Image 1 (tube, rainbow, N blue to C red):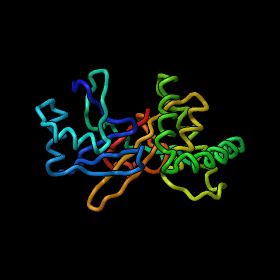
Image 2 (tube, rainbow, N blue to C red; image 1 turned 30 degrees about the vertical axis):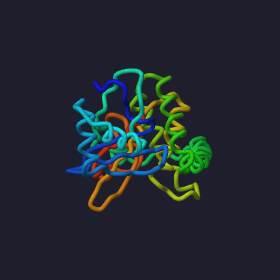
Image 3 (tube, rainbow, N blue to C red; image 1 turned 135 degrees about the vertical axis):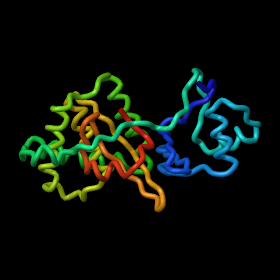
Length: 219
């Protein structure tokens, strides 16, 4: 445990090969630590001695913040399922879901703006903590399949973030908490996000999601 420090809210990190990559939602940016800063962060999370200059540089990145309690600082870990909605076949077109999707997509388009994404994710996380337990697999996949079946009716172009946020909001409205996952890959750099249960990818394909290393998980 690292006493006195934690990752800043809305921040996650992962190791992709030799790269140490961070997601900072508050600034809506991805960044990598290298050289002396990477070495200082590695010492920091192993609770080894750092000089004040090294700690000062880490604090200046905005990636860490003081904590009143011992907090583990570890890379994001989550198992990415190999199944997605394809194995369920096509969902049935449900007019009620089409209406819910239209409202949720309009909300998501605003909620994903750079100046709002950190607050949006914090709000989703808070609602999931209230629910306290993961959503039922069958119910979550059924609603996700219904969302996918009516998605073409909405003129808002498909995009991984907007669809993940919209479906997450719909599921939370039905008392179902699933995981919102942000992932990255390098060489070349690319980012992706998706919703998943422990068993099924709910937005996008499992093949695509498994090409990314999770960097932040909400729920």
